[in-house]
Length: 332
Image (tube, rainbow, N blue to C red; front, side):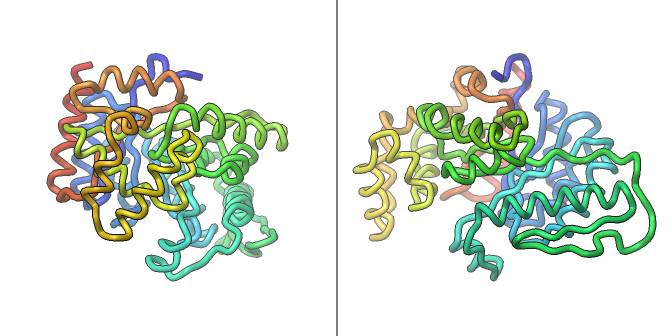
């Protein structure tokens, strides 16, 4: 369903600490944002989520997205369960598999089969939720086995279960989200054609396979004061795992040229390839054009969130742009 009258949310800049997360979340709620989303970039996303929940009263707070395989399903389930109860049902658990290189370099873990592993991971998390609610239970899956999720006797019988969103780019992961998730978090590197011809059919197929409703679609819209800033950020996503978005839109030659330029450390040349004709296909908006950007992408989303660039700018600049976005949102 389209966004309709629902306001967009905002993704907090990745480098904020807990105190700043509290302040920005409070400012977001005051500006009319419908949700605050927390990335898993520099800080611990569940601690930042707690900070954002502590300073807000009504809006949702969710991870967009937490790296699933960096933490066991039981640890993730505990964090989500407690955050959702403490906030009165305002927490959303957003999970993603992350690309191979980042998993290995940042977290020291690997995932040979990320799609099936994430499906099993979500099943394990839901089994933990059920065990917490009933006071007993276990889980045995293809990749994860949790024989004693409830370590201390007791049941949280009336606690609400947090919804689970899954992020993805390729059709396999998107279909898995359709099978087992309550929501799908589309990657920011997105075109309308890719959404219509790849994402939507894969979600529908997965949902039909599992005999469940199609998940809600969350779209992220990149907002910046200048086209140069938007183009520079998009070069950061032109990696082999995400280039399929450009390939699908007939921009394979541009993807090749961007990757070659980046490999040769010609970042300016890579940015120049993402010219206005390419940029206008992507989920981006100039700050001055934010109402039209929200209208364009909101009609394709169940939920929309606004995010700011991080590539090539300082943490303070990211926060300043985020506050400019909130000011614009408040005036709408």
